[in-house]
Image 1 (cartoon, rainbow over the protein chains, first blue to last red):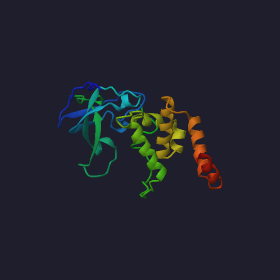
Image 2 (image 1 turned 30 degrees about the vertical axis):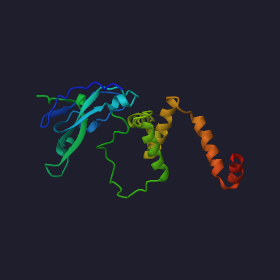
Image 3 (image 1 turned 135 degrees about the vertical axis):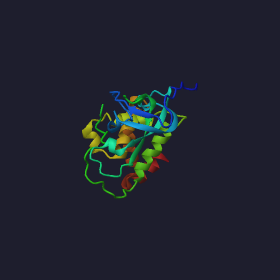
Image 4 (image 1 turned 90 degrees about the vertical axis):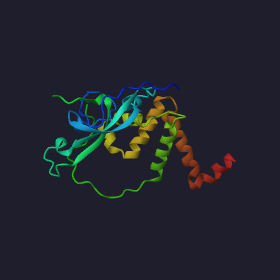
Length: 102
Length: 113
């Protein structure tokens, strides 16, 4: 089996990133409640086959960078009445992220 | 798109904090799924199953339990790939049920011996 192509990682730990809304049909692993939200990359998880490809039986690659991204709970939920520093950490694939809008 | 399974943030009331039993058949579904998806077979991926039950339609999705969804999507996927048919599966289930029903088990087992 040949090694799958690798999509280059565009982000580093500490980068601010905004989650895109790619309007894709089918199986996606980016929940709606983080789309459009801005968070911080806190960990690089490695390169993985894209679940959107795997969900339709495509196993040849490429592999995509996956990051753990932290969001302030107050940014995700309106009326969140808990400590200011509560955060939600979730894994997001590279192609769902971009630099935040200025 | 936001699927019917993508419910994070929806109002759902309090979370019931009860430990649910992990039933034997549920463990078997996971074991079979693992074997079918391992690196030597790659017949079914977990994401294919997710795609399957996320395409059930909301009524069927909500009616089935977590493991029933996985099981039904597993069967659907194997059928799509030509590994088995629902008819073959039903026939096999009927045979096993017949063999393990006390009244008929003796006769059936001796038939096989």
